Figure 1 (cartoon, rainbow, N blue to C red):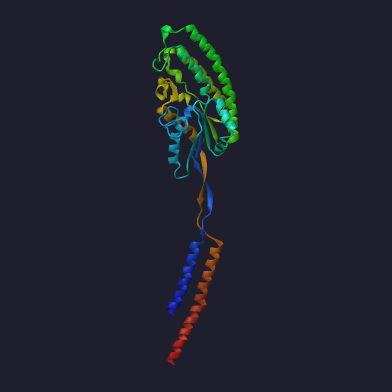
Figure 2 (figure 1 turned 90 degrees about the vertical axis):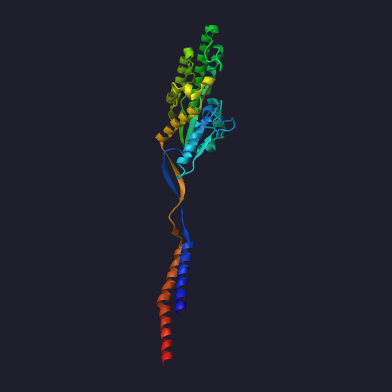
Length: 334
């Protein structure tokens, strides 16, 4: 008798447990976190963010060298690991001018990527004018093997004339760059809700102190370039790389090999500068998480039915069984 009662109660308890465990649900909810760096970032522009000259760089692959975009990707992937996945896209193209970047933006090829990013970093315009300046080196008898100007064989009048022509050409290039940077920033603001950053440019020619005229000339033109970047920073933020490289280009670039690009140490420094700009801005990310577990309506109904069954067994069935057991005992006694 007691075995039957125990079996009934145990069956009810097991029923309650099974229905409760099998009918629990956890809603997926969105939760926003405040973070210091962008969850998704995108780089545009020329050979500097592309990582030209670094080990592992190729014209078709920006992702396997120690460029500052890749340095930041590795850093942020680790930093955000407990919160959200990190993503970096690098569409920089070595040799690109501001005209080229405008054409790329107009092509629509980047629309999807731009629509889904938190930060866009642009380095562009150096190729608009620096290649013009490099034309002077041949006239000065300078090369990778001979960094000092060949003073004895220089036609000074020819060099001065070339600088005057160069002056006009670079001013025209800077005028075109100012028009383009306005259009670039406007188009970026149409295509992304992410923060937009434009980098300033260092003067890699500062190391040629043997020809001070060239240093002063390049300082003037690159200062004008940087003024254009800063004066037009209406809908973008400026990442001011130039002052951090001043007086250090011999250490931070490959200019001693007639290569204006940052070396490994230069990229590390740019990564620090960009990182500081990001953290001054601040970002947020929204992730999907499971909420607290809760019972479904069906589970609640079944549990209620189970409890009712236990109650019925306790109030009616068990007393009846005990009464019947007692009556059977009395009959045997008679």
